[in-house]
Length: 228
Image 1 (tube, rainbow, N blue to C red):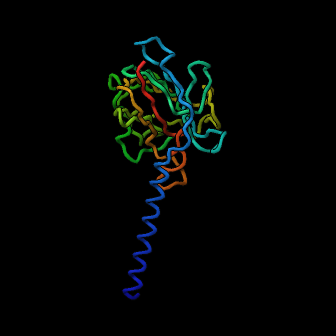
Image 2: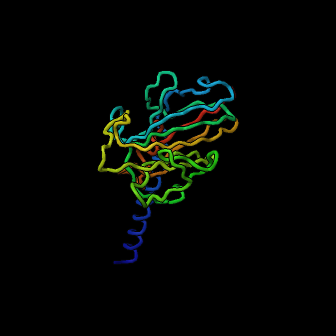
């Protein structure tokens, strides 16, 4: 192989690698189409904790991407499950969060996301048992995380067994295999804050970070924190 050929080969590989990086970053940064903000401040008396209930599912089963995994939130007024990850919360308030986790799991690439961080009391509960850290290399691993980087909040969501009664399409009910994770955190002052899952579960995308991982109303969303 001549020097010119080697140089051309190296340049070609570099361009391919650069293209993959640009493609991955564009997929990661694409916010998707945001839905209307679901407001919670008016649902509780001022100064009282806000109750926020969500579920994570392995297959949404409807919409533009029926095979994608997703978060859903329980509408505080109707009690119905809605695919919406933009939530309005009161500033300087305690948020009591309950997560019904219906998805199967796998080990984490970065074990730091197995730590419970930024929550009141430093612990969460998994099926009513308190924990501050969970080893994703044990049991069923993690289905997802609930993480708010700007708050320093991270809570791992332990997966269910792939051999059990796994929910096939959302919204899931408690007749299917699930884990219940509860924790509380406090909102800061007004502003818009992004939250997301840090389990790279965009199957078929570069490093798993595309698809549902980079699309709002699936595995990430926004908190609109306001004074009330």
